[in-house]
Image (cartoon, rainbow, N blue to C red; front, top):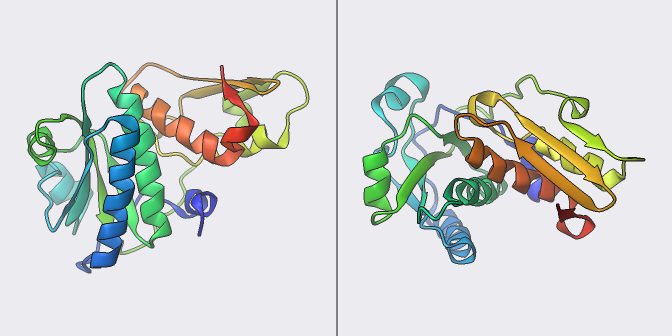
Length: 219
């Protein structure tokens, strides 16, 4: 499975089995996390064998069996939310490629635990990871016409980028993006709201994965 396959296969999963993540997959996830940290000046960490990163409501009501998570944090440099979204999307989809399931938790997490896990990083959220009891289901989506506009005849890469974007996880499932294209220039905006900066980073990653980075430039 490649990234495009992972985009199509990934769904939010909140209930997990007690099957541990094998050592070799932990090592691969940690390598992917290290690469993201180095490339984007982040301080993301994988925590195995603990649910400390989730708050009480997430543990007892929203999800079951979470025993591993990815703590999202980094320097508060003004672009932290977008970088966390972008890097988190890459790590989350890589986990899907490895046969794991994920749940992006942007509100119901323990900031204290994330600060501890990341040696004082500014917390953004956590991603639960492990073997889901199910593979999740696709929720109702908006259409490409709801979120995108292209000036002229729409090229295939733009269509593919929007299709991938429509499968991205967003806060409250809002999918509050507007994507516009002209020539090889693309702009994307996200309505202000809860975690809109994180959503922006996730959205950019998904669009790039679908469209192909070499086919366009961000305006």
